[in-house]
Image 1 (cartoon, rainbow, N blue to C red):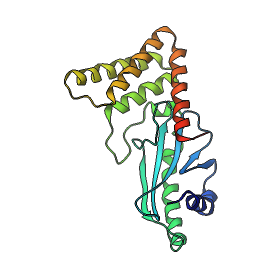
Image 2: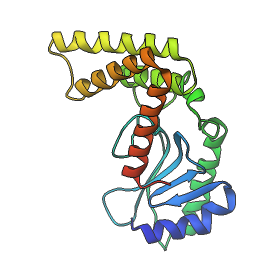
Image 3: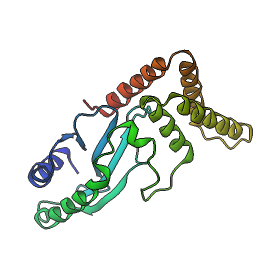
Image 4: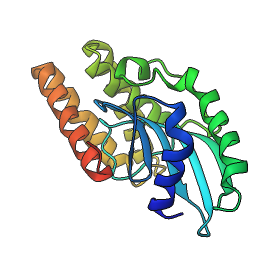
Length: 208
C-alpha cells in the first residue's frame, strides 16, 4: 500500500476519531515521542491493496533500526481499496478505538517496567528483562535496574558457554555490562547512554 493512500485513509477515516496523533510515514503515533513510540503501523503486505495494521508500543531507548513488534498487537490484515474503503474503514477504526483504553497510557518507561505479556506473541524473556532494566534506569530505580542487568548478563553468558546463545546476545551483554559500569560510577551516565540510544532509534525510524 502506497504512502499517499495511507495518508488518504488516515486523513479521511482515522483522524476524526483520534486526537494527539501524527502520521509519520507508515506510523500513526502519539505526540510527543519522548521515550516510547505509541501508535499504529500501517504496514504493507503482499499486494498493492493489502493493509497490515498493528498497534505498537516500542521503547526508543532500546537501540533498534526498525519497527519492533514484540509489544504489538495485530489489528487487521485485509485488502483495502478505493472500491471498498467506505465499507471497511469504519470497522477498522472501531477496532483501533477498542484498543485505546489499554495501550493509550503506555507512553513512559515507568509503565513499561511492570508491563506483562498481553500480546498474541510469545514474550522473549531476554528482551523482556532488558526492557524492564532499561526502563527502571529512566524511572530512577537504579539499584533494581542494576540487579536485573546483572541477572541478564549471567543468563546470557551461560547461554554462550552452553553454545545456545543467539547472534544478538553478544550486543545485549555488552550494553548491559556498560550500563552496570555507568550505574556504579554515576547513574546519570547510564541515563545519558539511554538518551543516546533513544536518539539513534528515532533517527532510524525517521521520527521527530
